[in-house]
Image (tube, rainbow, N blue to C red; front, side, top):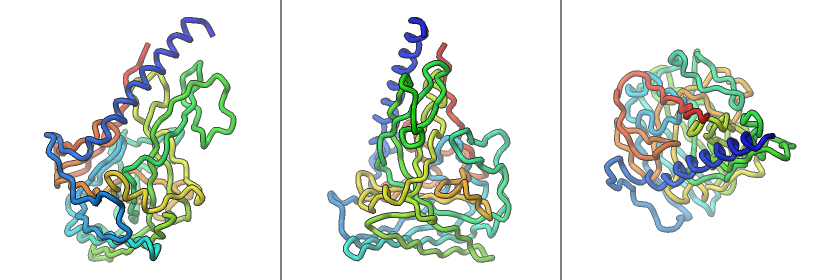
Length: 322
């Protein structure tokens, strides 16, 4: 490798590190609205051994780049979750209620918006006779992932958990990883009323297929794209790496989300979400109706331009570095 190419690779790597540093540094802004107004709910200073929360659910609380908020999300009524936990009894219970939720809907992605890439499942363009999954997402980082890039092409090769033998000369980025936990598949009755109670163990939170959820991280598929935020890992988390519910109560708490899922659901989606979202909420931070969290970028609250119909959070391709 000649000196100019090596110098360019180093410059690109340093640029990406700087961009990711800015993104991570904005995480505390999640506790504020766009005008800086604090909107925290009452959050105990220490993790309580028992507790409960009543959480109203709103349309598309925090779609990540590539997520499509479905067109019927704004029509759902009286949507909420009641969360209760008891550490001594090793129990977590989340009761969901929704009304006017479509029974076995058909949902088509807006053309040209599918966020799939070689590190994600093959997300469907259309879901027919769909069902729903709920998602429990800690706002605290799961771990810092190590991602390897080819020194010549600058393409992403994989991560420390997916790449057994990375090249010795690979370029490396450390990128924060969060985890997501999937509920069993659910559906409302034919009148659109859904009541579902999700029961979990406090000491080890496992998803519907027995994994500790899956990893999610956003970063570049190629280091020449400064600021690119694509989904670069969806690795299932083995049960032995599962977190306790303490992790979900740490920091600013957790998020809840809802997705439309294929029915039947292909095995490649085990522990992984289908990016067609409905509604959700944050446990300790109230997001007003008509707003969303600018996840993966500023982490502040921003208003939806249109509160009706489908909305797709645009992908962030980054800026090509010569």
